Length: 313
Image 1 (cartoon, rainbow, N blue to C red):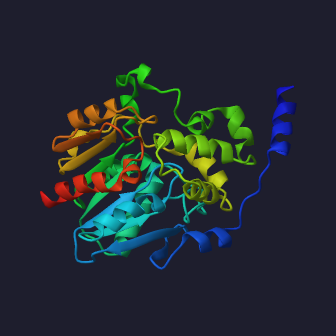
Image 2: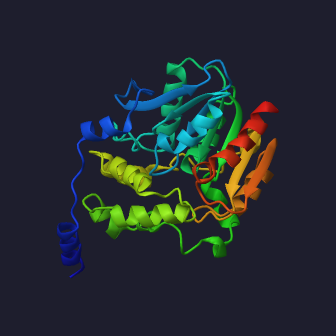
C-alpha cells in the first residue's frame, strides 16, 4: 500500500525540470563569469566591487546561490573586491559531470575560482553550509585565508551533541528534515518542491519581509534548473563525508568574525558560543531580531560589522 501511495504522489505532484538555457539567461548578468574545471564542472562566479580593495570571497548555503550575497556585494563592493560563486548542485553551476557534491568538491571549487582570478590571499566567508565550506577550506589552505567571516555557519558534525535538543525548532524548514528520510528521497526527484520552498524560506528568513515572490521564484527556478534536483539529492548524502574525525578548529588562528541571528531556526544560536570557544582569534556578533540569513534580512547592519572587522585587520 505504501508503494502505491508513493507512485500516486509521484504522478499527481510531478513537475519536470526547467531547461538550462532558460534559467541561465534569467539569472546571469553582465557580472557573471564561467570557468570549466579540470573535472568538467562549469562554475558560475562573479567578481565585483573595488578591484584594488581587499578581496572577500563569499560562499552561499544549502539550496541557495551566489545571489544571496548581492545585497552585501552592493554595500561592501564600495570598499572591497567581492567574489561570489555557485557551488556544485547549486545556482548556475548545478549538476557536475563527476557527480561529486561533498565537502571535498566544495573545497576544490572554491580553489578553482580563486586560482582563476589569481588571488594569493583573501578573506573567506560563508553562510550556513557555506560557512562549513569556509572553515574546511581554511583548514586545508590556511596560508591563503587571511581572515574568516562565519555567518550562521554549519559546525562540525561532532558538535551536534553539545547543542541542546530543545533548541531544535519545530518551525524550521521542513525540506531539510524530509531530505533525511529515505521514503521522501525516493520520490523527491520528481515532485514539485514549491510548497516546501515557500515554507522553508519563511522559516529560514525568520518571516522577514525580504521573502518576496521574486525571492521565492529565484530559489524555485534555480532548484528546478535541469539536473539540479537530482544533484541536490546526491549532495545531501555526501556532504560531511570528510569528517571521519573531529576537525581541530584551534588550528585556525586567522582573525574570525562570527555573525549569528538569534532567531535562527536552522542552526541554534548556541553554536556561535561553541565556535567562539573553539577558534583562538574570534569576534562574535549576535543579532537578536534576525534569523538564518542575516546578510539578506538586514544587509546594512550586518555589512557594517564586516567593514568594522576588515578595517581592523
